[in-house]
Image 1 (cartoon, rainbow, N blue to C red):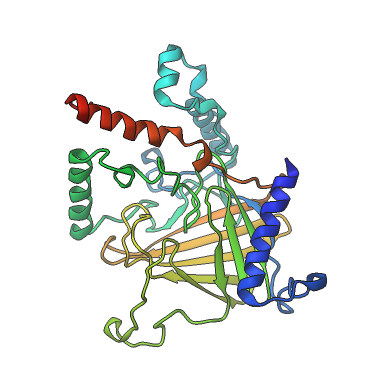
Image 2: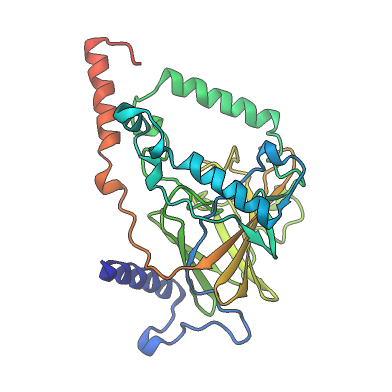
Length: 333
């Protein structure tokens, strides 16, 4: 199957070269400008460290080696639910036997410290509260979903529709498929996450639309808000900084909306480590900005195509079942 991964890599590279006008003859244009760190490669961002700090660690942002080892043993036993008694009905009810998940086998180690949460700001390691506007928006969405569980595919979750998982932006670890491939060119960077059907083409050293405006009212309107936002990159020393805005708000991050301003930072720590940090600034969704950090390690395995849509019989069956309930006047369960 390695040929599949090679085709995917070649396709992404050709798309980027076509977008940038890079000469593909003899590989010209593949290397970045001199003195710019090399971020290219396939990186694994799986970790057992949760986004938010568990209550058991209260105000402790880090763990000792011994504490981390004990926590890992307990966490692994809790996650590997196939070893629990419950019978086949329990496994079928879950849909996926969780012992097969690939969450990773270690906790996030950042600058030599073992983190209890990926969130580093606020200092309590927890997400800030949602605004009243965001809570009202979520309540309306929940009420609509209850009243219209399956009028059409748009009423089902993005996950059921193979449209959103852990690929971001920003990138966050999930139960499996935690790979991301970075391709680097002189004036563009391509970020292709494993669990997505798209790649982010990031122009480097261009200001975002409206960046020079002094007030939001002076910023030019964009004709189309984007699913992945409008990214613009720049180098700050050894760190690639990507700022994204103009999201469409559909692919929400823990309650974010179309006003999300996302800042991502990629720093090459050593040969096999890439440090990823992002800040979420969305004043109509969160009461304050928040920041998380996630170490990535170089992957030795190839990244394969995530063919979710091709085998997604579940969505078709859900809609078919809803139409049957309507015809027979059976109340949905």
